Length: 359
Ligand SMILES: Cc1cc2nc3c(=O)[nH]c(=O)nc-3n(C[C@H](O)[C@H](O)[C@H](O)COP(=O)(O)OP(=O)(O)OC[C@H]3O[C@@H](n4cnc5c(N)ncnc54)[C@H](O)[C@@H]3O)c2cc1C
Image 1 (tube, rainbow, N blue to C red):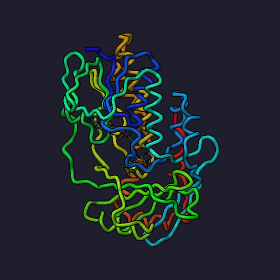
Image 2: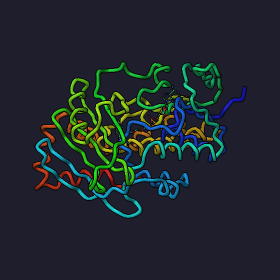
Image 3: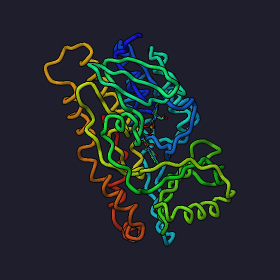
C-alpha cells in the first residue's frame, strides 16, 4: 500500500486549499471526500476580501473571477420593525463577491488535482488508527496510509470525533439555505434581516439567483421558514439544505501528526461571512507546518508553530464574532441598535473591520 505524506479528510475550501499547498510543495497528497462534486453547501456564499491574497498564492484569482458571481456593493441591516441601515462596501479588485459553493469548491478541488493531489470523492472516512503515522479506513472498505493527517471535514468533523476531540453535541441553532430566483430590483446588496424568530441573510450570487439563509432555534425555525415562503413566494416543499450547530467550542488545531483546519478547528458566527477566509488561511498555515514535519528540517515543533499561527489569524477579531453572536441571539436588542446606528458610526466601523483584507 502506498504511504502518502499527508491525507486530508474533506474537500471544502480548507481541505482542497491545504491539498493544493501541500502538492505545490511536492508532497504526496491524498484527499478523501464524502460527497460527489459539484455540490452545494449551507453557506451565505460571500467571499470576504481577505481571501484574495490566499487565492492569489494558489494562482486562482482570475479563475474565480471568470466563474459566475455577484459583486457586492453594500450591506443592508434591517431591524424587526423594518428600519434599515445601509453601509457601502469598498469597490474595485479587492471587493467582496458572492459565488455559489458548488462552483468555488469545485474550482479549489480541481486546482488540487492539477497540482498532483489524488482526490477520492464519494469516500467517507469511518475509522482511524494512529501508528507512527495514520491508517485511514473508509465506508466502502478501502484503507489508506499517510504520515500526517488533516481534519478538514467541517464543524461536525469525523476526524475530531474519532480522535475523541469533539465536544458532545449541544442543542443548538439550525441554519437553512437555498438558492431562489433573484427578486427583481434586488441590487448588489447583502441583506442581514433581523426577525423575532431569528435572522435571514440574503445575497445575489449571479444575475438570476439569490442565496437565502435562515438561522434560528429549532423551535422557531418553522415560523422563520414560513416568513421566507411568504416573503419570497416559495412553495412549502421548497428544497432547503440544513446544518447545525452554528456554534461550538474551538479545538486545539494541532498535535503531533494531526492537524485540524477550517471549521473542524474553529467555527465562527456565519453572520460575519468570514468562515471561508479562515478555512483558506488556516489550510495554508497547516500546509507549511506539514511540509516541515515531512522534511524534518525544523528547530521548533511545527505543530506548536501552526497552533500559534492559527491563534494569530483569529486574534483581534474574535470580539467581532462574539458581538455578532450576541447580536443574532438577541434580535430585539440588535434591532434597537440598528435604530441607534442610523445616527452612530458603530455599524460602519464594524463592517469596515470585517471586510478589511488581511494577509
Ligand atoms: C448559515 C451559514 C452561512 C455562512 N455564510 C458564510 C459566508 O457568507 N461566507 C463565509 O466565508 N462563510 C460562511 N459560512 C461559514 C462557511 O460555510 C464555513 O466556514 C466553511 O464552509 C468552512 O470550510 P471547511 O472547508 O472548513 O468545511 P466545509 O466547507 O464544511 O467542508 C467539509 C467537507 O468535508 C466533507 N466531509 C465531512 N465528513 C467527512 C468524512 N467523514 N469523510 C470524508 N469527507 C467528509 C464534507 O462533505 C465537506 O465537503 C456560513 C456558515 C453557515 C452555517
